Image (cartoon, rainbow, N blue to C red; front, side, top):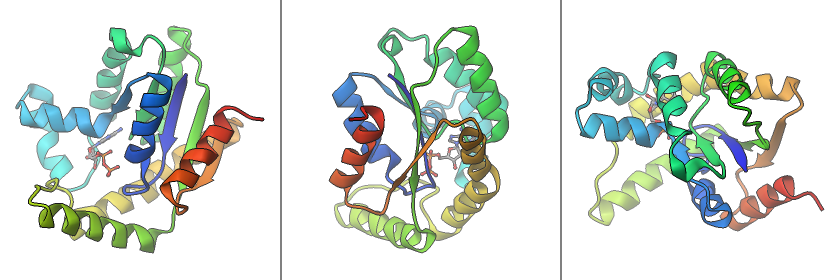
Length: 194
Ligand code: ADP
């Protein structure tokens, strides 16, 4: 099973990806997580990405395409994968298409979680408050200013990715404002049509 999850920051892609990962025994490949790991390990990529990420802007297509190209060949991805946070630009979507064609790994579905932007800002604020209340630490880009930049980047650069897959008849849009279990059921329906 090879899937893409699309949706703005805070739409719940991570939550759904975790469930799908368990269900299909395939890894969730989150470019955000991989980049944060690179930043934490202060690798060459991490050093390049750090400031850009903290401001809520996008890292270069070249970097993330390279990361994904390497990652999909790891043994744990042999049964498939869930792409979360990638592709985020049309150029990344095109690069992914070429890559998957070259390796003969067709996509099974592209699932978009549709959400209302106002609700996202509230969700993000709540997520941050809950994490802090529990004594946790929040991401460097989980502050209102960077979050707004992330939403702007989404609107300008990632929303066209949905159109890209829609035109190719591959996009399935699901209501991401529904309760978590319901979103999960809808995703299942899309993946395994009755
Ligand atoms: P969210 O979707 O919640 O904003 P992510 O964890 O997916 O967060 O990404 C965090 C940051 O990592 C992004 O704001 C961006 O700087 C960088 N990033 C992640 N994936 C990509 C990508 N595919 N292309 C460019 N930058 C990316």
